[in-house]
Image 1: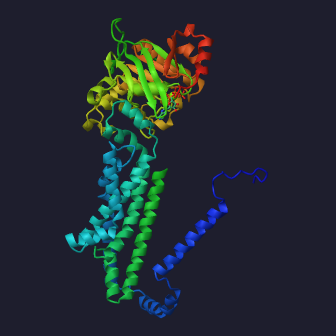
Image 2: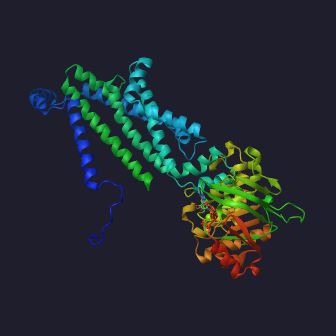
Image 3: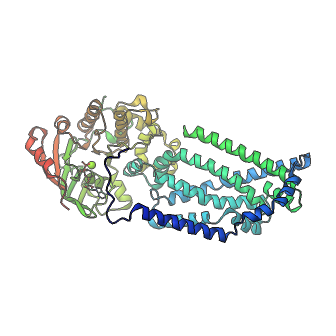
Length: 268
Length: 274
Ligand SMILES: Nc1ncnc2c1ncn2[C@@H]1O[C@H](COP(=O)(O)OP(=O)(O)OP(=O)(O)O)[C@@H](O)[C@H]1O
Ligand SMILES: [Mg+2]
């Protein structure tokens, strides 16, 4: 530590302690407001412990009979499929919007702004909301879930990919431009080769997230194991619900391990 | 490294460019102006480069050397003046016609700017992107066979045919710079503008690259301009030396006549006035 030389405080700036106090005050006020706004009440939680205990009592032991287990596994596969298709089918849309919405590759400012806005919109609308919309369009079931994921994931992955493309060294792009390459050729030969590892990593990360989201989509009627969880709660069959949650746990951990393993491979 | 003049298997466009004395010079810049917000970088630059010659471009930091070259290849848009490639004006032009005229000039960068993850041969082929239709160029797998052969020939010219299958990232800096020169050849450029091509190379690799550039000029008839920061290199390899100061031509002389006074004046003048 350099105790001998002190850096003089820049003139015109408030002293650090005053600024710090202001920040702390604001944070405290915000938390108090949030506490009131959410009806946060540990007392209610303590009073409700009996209900929780009853719930746990009924959930344990889980119903591991074959009909329940088999139905759960089949539904978990559907959940996996929703996540898979939702991720894969969003790739072409995400790629096009990422290229148009990255400063380094956009053909002009208007296209850039339009692509950015569309990506923001798709990202801002939660996949559950998309699912509710598509359930009314194509009916209850996994197809609505796939559509919802395609839309939302295009927004998220497009943003992540366009950021990856904005961070690369622009030298090769400029070099190919001086060779006379057009925009598409530049993307294909200078930009994409540089970002493939990041793209694959982000894709796998999104697959992981999307499988977990498709569980939630099931809760609103878009098929898969989330749908079964919802049903068993409605029927007060908490032992069956526990079985389904165990299957979910296995599914989520499995997908996580798989995508982490592949990402490690790609990063090398 | 061997640069064989007559032999040209795949690169007919490169062979025999000995200019007729009346022909327009490959590159002729006159009155070129370029400002960035708050500063004038090129203040009426005049510069001409000749086929079959290596011209060294000297100048202090900020004197506008890179900006001048970048204006020629389209990485900067000049504010005014004239740039003629083989007598054809390119300032104020746009679209296909501009791309066609400009395809004869290639740029070599200090930082080389190859695509690191791609193979050496694919990188050389990329020089030809400007004349390939999209369906033959969306990925390297679609590159036509004749192009690969032409690219091989370009690699042979820079002495790296045996590295064609390697990934660029495995090559040394000097080798990478020679691959970049092969890419320029594959572009079928007859004007090569090199911006500090050897600034990041060790002396041996630097000598190899400059020898290659001067051989290409002499034996292939290319017009080469190389920005250099070491006057000794200019004296040793260049056929002509020009100095830039404050965005203008300060001197234009032969290496034999390049005096220490010229150099002292050049490096004392500093940057262009705002
Ligand atoms: N895109 C830009 N925006 C603003 N200023 C720029 C830009 N490019 C270059 N300049 C300025 O223009 C001046 C000339 O730059 P240039 O790169 O042409 O000089 P140079 O002769 O190549 O110098 P060096 O020997 O350092 O490479 C510099 O002062 C630089 O800061
Ligand atoms: Mg420079």
